[in-house]
Image 1 (cartoon, helix red, strand yellow):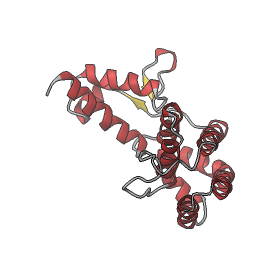
Image 2 (tube, one colour):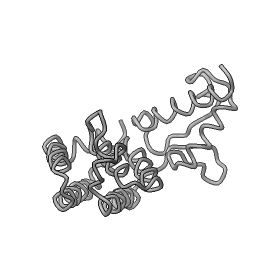
Image 3 (tube, rainbow, N blue to C red):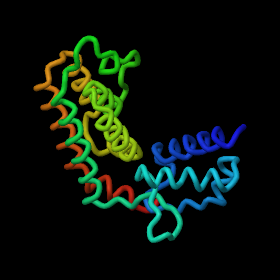
Length: 199
C-alpha cells in the first residue's frame, strides 16, 4: 500500500471512530497508541490527526498533544445553532430544480436528520455550504445516541422531516427544522451532563 493509501485508510478509520463516539470528549489521542490500533506508522497517524484538527474533530491545545474536543453547554448550543443556520441558508435555494441530480433526489433515502440536512445542502448548489453542513454534522455525530435518550419521539421527528422534504415546499421544511433544533437546545444540559458523568 502506498503512503497516500495508508494515510487515507488511517484518516477515514480515525474519523469513523470519532464520529461514532468511541472516544469521550477530552480524551487524549496518543499517536503511538493509535499506531497499534490502526496498524500504521506514526507519520500517517500524525498527518491524519492534523487533518482532523483542521476539521475541528480533534483539538491540539497549546501543542499539548491531541484530544477529542471538550463540550460544554455553551459550545454544544453553538454547534446546534450553526447547524440550524446552515440548513436555513440551504433552504434559501430550495427546492432545487428537477434537473439537479445532486440534490435531495439521492438514490439512498436519508436515514438520519444529518443525512437529510446534507442532502438539503447538496440541493443548494453551493459547494462551500454543502461542505460546512457535512462538517457540522460530523462534529455532532457522536451525540446521536444521547439525542435518542433525551429528545422524545426522535423517530416520529425523522418521519416528519422526510415527509415535508418529499413535499418540496420550503416553508414546512423550515418549520420542521426549527422545531428539530429547539428540541435539541432544550436537551443540551442533559446531554452534557451525561457526557461528563463517570461511566
